[in-house]
Length: 104
Image (cartoon, rainbow, N blue to C red; front, top):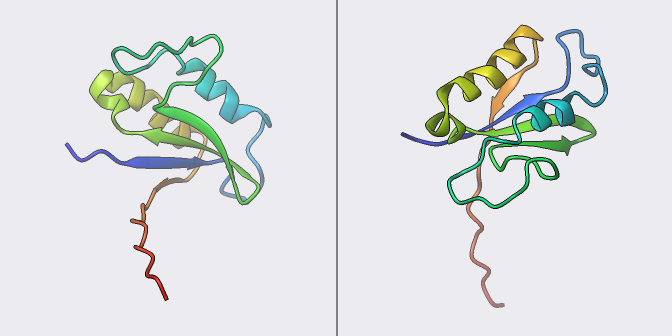
């Protein structure tokens, strides 16, 4: 399976910030127990590597690694349905390979 990173953007369809203002942290806190095998992070103090809050251009977002679905498909469905139920846009991340630097 191709794994992707998706962004849930905290902007409503009317262009206003989604409320409550800590929605991203709350969602990521709920998902904190979903960790890869052998991950020693404590879900009481750290977020899951699969569901993390970020701030992009002053917009709260949640980054979702679709490997979450390999661990538990229901967990991935939960976060995707959260976005859909609240009319929050979901965008696929694009990744850039760093261009090798040339010496002048």
